Amino acid sequence: MHKLNYDPFSFSKQFNTTIGFEPILKRLAEMSEAMPKIPTYPPYNIKQLSEDRYKIEMAVAGFAKKDLKIELHNNQLTIEGSQETSSDNSDSNYVYKGIAARQFRQSFALEDHVKVLGSELKDGILNIELERDIPEEKKPRSIEIK
Image (cartoon, rainbow, N blue to C red; front, side):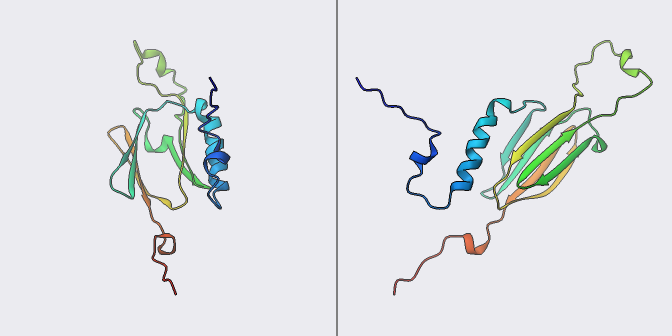
């Protein structure tokens, strides 16, 4: 019996009827290489609020606003958390410390037309609101036949 060698990540075979998608395919290939390295701390949710609105909810218990940094660069949204260590050795007073306060860096690749609307830290949850804003010239339109 002949076994088919199907590779779902062989983009050249899957997209042989597309034109101009090379940058997207390259980005997907790069992302698939990084998949095993994706951090799981801190835990987060991605909610779709409507067709074009999203929210990232990230559990950052123990972090204050001053400990967090959000940056958008080249369609890459990066959230970093870092707490200053105190010099008074107050960490030794804990009998049990179950709230992680380790540094983190979490990145999200955003599509070209997704913009960050804002962020809020409330009750240990960092909320980041996103919206896809497709320009009129990129939206579907009818082409008149002459």
